[in-house]
Amino acid sequence: MRILLKVLLGLLGVTAVAAGVASLWFWFTPVGVNNYINKVSVQLAVDSPELITALGVIDNTPLDFHSGKLADYTKAQEERSLEKLRKARAGLNDYGPDGLEGQELLSWRIAAWFFDDLLRQAEFEYGGYRVVQNSGVTVSLPQFLTDMHVIKNKKSVDRYLSRLNEFGRVLGETRNRVEDDRDHGVVPPDFIIEKTIVGMRAFIEGGAAESALVTTLPEKLDEIEGLNDNDKEKFIAEATRLVKEQVIPGYEAMIALYEDMLATTDHDAGIWRIPDGDKIYAAALKSNTTTDMTADEIHQIGLAEVARIEEEADAILIAQGFTEGSVTERVTALMQDPEQNFPNDDAGRQQMLDYLVELNTEVMAKAADYFISLPDQPLEIVRVPEYSENSAPGGYYQPPAIDGSRPGSFYINLKNTTDNPRWTLPTLLYHEAAPGHHFQLSLSQKIENVPLLRKISPFSAYSEGWALYAERVAKTDMGMYAEDPLGDLGRLQAETFRAVRLVVDTGMHAKKWSREEAIAYMIEKTGNTEDEVTREIERYVVWPGQATAYKTGQLAILKMRERAESQLGERFNLPAFHELVLMNGAMPLGILDETVDEWIDGQRSM
Image 1: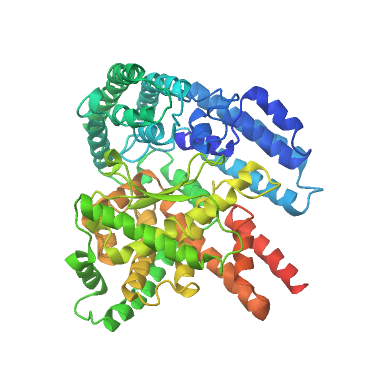
Image 2: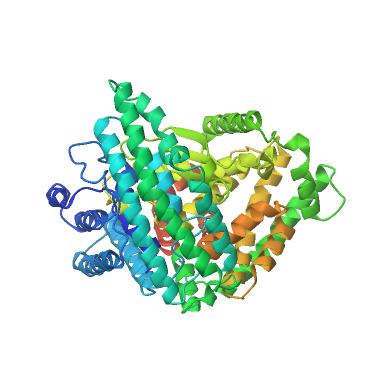
């Protein structure tokens, strides 16, 4: 069972209170299926202190039992978590679906699908790569500790130091799991191992004193009222010692293991290369698309969409006077045009951030005409941490804490500003911020009278499909590109990017394409830089199927909207349709499709 299962188990339990408090939750929520889903969520959540903190529900309150701890990453603990999950799924049958209706029936169906999906993936004990260039504890825990662990008083500093000490244990436990994976035929390909080693070495380069785990601490200590300089020095000295004695040796041991594995691994890219790889990929596609589509069906949809979008992009380029060369050649020339790029220095990076803030202000000024509910949680636009730039995507979103202690965050990768020319930025913002992920993930926290599972987004096809659909809304409905044809070209380039993902993901994992074949195809069809494409392809190598969620979800939501518009005619109300999709929370596409049909019937009868 992959570490992904542990993450998802944590996501399920975002209410995150101690086992003792779980009984209180049981008595103070409505009797029935919602109560049961919440209760088992709590029981599963206590295994993941990191996810509890990420949600920001009870850190630094009298209920805080977890924020000085990190999870148990041993195989034994994973098996205990899996047994809890099996019991949770079996118990759900005592609460439905017979006798349920409305929102309670919807909650039961969503929870049942989610539990079943986790159990499907858990069938493969050795189902993927545990530590790679862009995920695993060597990547996720540093950013978790620097960005998510809230320091507001001496006690929270002590808990931070406790977690630094725990980090050494986690690295050791994870190294044992990687060795176990290796012994059962699960070793990443050579190019992934090489990038993973580079990332780990970069993180510990400069020693403890230069570690982000230490250098980010002084500014936080300065904000603690009444903390004297002597106490600050002691805290920083202790953090430095813990990084030196616990964290760095853990990284060094992991590096040594990966260097050993590099000598014996191969260069094949697809997950088919490990035991049960074909079955693992089929389960990954079902999980990520929440459909029963085969790899071949997804591959063909991708090819058709790439061709369609290429025609639309060609029309824009011709209208703007760009007529020489292929579509990709013309797009590449635009990307390299100095007038279309921010300077690749600190001043240019700040200009890019300022431009994104301006774009967000513009789209929010129009949002109320197209959406009934708007997020009241603030959005910040910030730089991807420099230590993770090499493996991070061009941009990503982190949802706000439920208690309001942390805003929603749109992270933009500023390693090389030429990776994101000015004309590509509007679509990136509409996807990650408004009306994309920031709307979807922030609003989901506001849904009332449903279990917490309905307020989070464990279904990639829904959440990524919505964000890609939001790009289309920005154009066709909100008119954000009316005076910006190159911005619209950026939208098409981004959509091409997602369509290409269908082709290369299934190409590598089902049709045995090489890494180089996938890179060449993506460069040919997108015009993106080789560095950016390489990062993306290598991400798909280690996260089989994940990249298929975006386009699959977008196409499904567009079909649902088209059906509603066709059947309702003048009765169709776009803000109401968006309210239906957003304010029911994340769900598998098949269940969402049926929910839309029920809404259409209801609108007809009004």
